[in-house]
Amino acid sequence: GAVVSQHPSWVICKSGTSVKIECRSLDFQATTMFWYRQFPKQSLMLMATSNEGSKATYEQGVEKDKFLINHASLTLSTLTVTSAHPEDSSFYICSARETGQGRSRKLFFGSGTQLSVL
Amino acid sequence: DAKTTQPPSMDCAEGRAANLPCNHSTISGNEYVYWYRQIHSQGPQYIIHGLKNNETNEMASLIITEDRKSSTLILPHATLRDTAVYYCIANSNSGNTPLVFGKGTRLSVIA
Image 1 (cartoon, helix red, strand yellow):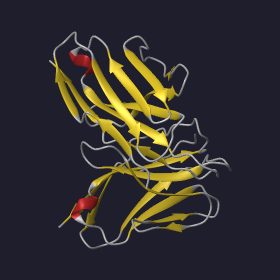
Image 2 (spheres, chains in turn orange, green):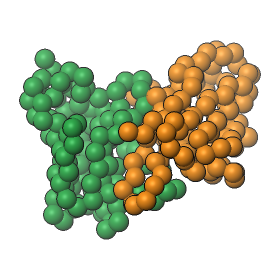
Image 3 (tube, helix red, strand yellow):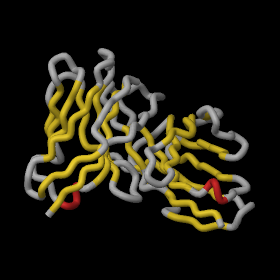
Image 4 (tube, chains in turn red, blue):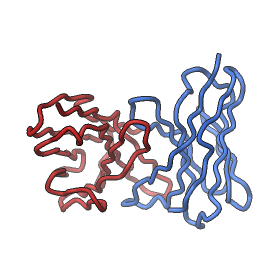
């Protein structure tokens, strides 16, 4: 099946620094990718929709200047957490829908990135 | 996407079938029923999805009622590795439509 690769799996950084998370679709092209955030013991919350070649669409309450999304190619989207603070510590997950004909297409998820800001 | 309702938790004995229910009474005609699961500290894993007919794959079976207002995910022989949070999601499956996650059902498989 389709594979979405996310890197790094975990990162620890100091407050005020920026962290970049990569999401790659390995065997299919994805014009659209989605970024989620998950706090402990909670469900996944959609942060933004990443569109190849255009600006991302952010959910209400998500700061676009803090969470920079770049979708420069059909197989790569990046999320940069700028000037990270402890409250940004969370599990970040990307996903992409497989391309192709027909309506029955699955959404695949990366393995997630655990961000800890000290 | 239509709202789905799932029990917060369930237990299942190892080796027995796990039947996870989901209500989606407001599902529209073009929305599929998707099931994903999330094992601790991992990304969600696709299990199965369907529109009207029952579906089966190597992981599970999906039974959808005729009126499509509810469905059941069946893990025929649960193992300890099936312990996870299971999410039932109604989604129109268009290219730009993300999956919206509810709280899911926490399934505990007990030895």
